[in-house]
Amino acid sequence: MSQRIRVHCINVSADGVGAGHEQSLDRPFGSDVSPGDLFFWLGATAHWLNRTDPGGTRGMEDYISRDYTRNIGAEIMGRNKFGPQRGPWENEDWTGWWGDEPPFHTPVFVLTHHPRPSFSLSDTTFHFLDATPQEAADRAKAAAEGQDVRLGGGVRTIREFLDAGLVDEMHIAVVPIELGEGIRLWDSSEELTDRYEHEQVSAPSGVTHHFFWRD
Amino acid sequence: MSQRIRVHCINVSADGVGAGHEQSLDRPFGSDVSPGDLFFWLGATAHWLNRTDPGGTRGMEDYISRDYTRNIGAEIMGRNKFGPQRGPWENEDWTGWWGDEPPFHTPVFVLTHHPRPSFSLSDTTFHFLDATPQEAADRAKAAAEGQDVRLGGGVRTIREFLDAGLVDEMHIAVVPIELGEGIRLWDSSEELTDRYEHEQVSAPSGVTHHFFWRD
Image (cartoon, rainbow over all chains, first blue to last red; front, side):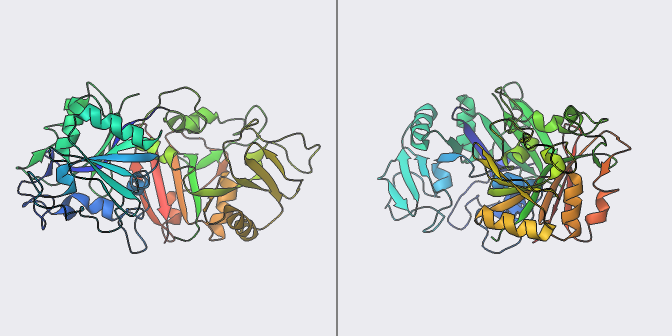
């Protein structure tokens, strides 16, 4: 099976918003969005990557958690997933939200117009690229050594890769809240059904899981 | 996380039947049951273990396929999953349904009152045990070297392990057909909800997926 670019566990509101404006250190998803409003279903699962206590659910949504790292050899993310800074780096002290043990365990390519030197934390290495989606995809696929590449978000980055025709499969969780303002993945999931196979499944959590794929 | 005994991708009819009577070489699920009636949803997925052609779906049911081998270090199966023979072995020529490359890739423990010597096909080794469920669980866990054990069926074997309190999590696919006669997993999924967390999710295929787990 050839290498694929996969989107996993990206959460949007019922009106298609993945993050609010005014991202900050205290509000990584923007001033109006609590991460828990979007991630509650994922945080409840037994295999959630950031789980530290035992327990957790093992239903359908846990199967989605279980797949997050399967056959992934690299991640691509937008700069705004990496941190709240904008423009030239004032300093390079910021090393992401994830502490000394980031949950990626692979090379991670951060897209930015302001590259800085690569660095490693535990078994994750962050590289900074000023590149087109295609160039970033090529770099990440080479680094993944035959495994797939996770496109980690945020929604603006995913939109750019969708527009460039680079996404092979995508899981989007639509949570039952309305956000109104913010950074939007789509107006409707129907926008993508001319290009992808599409399936949606309702979970007992109240979340509707959308799956898109192409061969 | 401690070792768990997991049931995956076991299919039953809407009336709880997993296989018909009169199993034979030509009819591995019994005279009245076509495997395709039970397995169609699994066979449609991209990650189905026995897939030889490209393509396949990548929706919710494919996530279930993807999990089939994850962190599995051994399988336990009943003799009737291994083959249609009953009683003492007339000869030991029969080596299972799966050809020279069985899809297990781990030790497999076949429960039978008529043990025979172990043998290997590719990276699968079949062992034959005349043992209680608890004894078989202990042997398989030791062989799995820290990974989980898949309890592979059939439904009579699963029932025995459920009754012995040995199953930690279980995925059962309820397909929308009625079989009436046959080997029954349950009269109703409600039988297990005093002992397990339980979730059910309807897939676009028409199959209802039941998930049971305990901590």
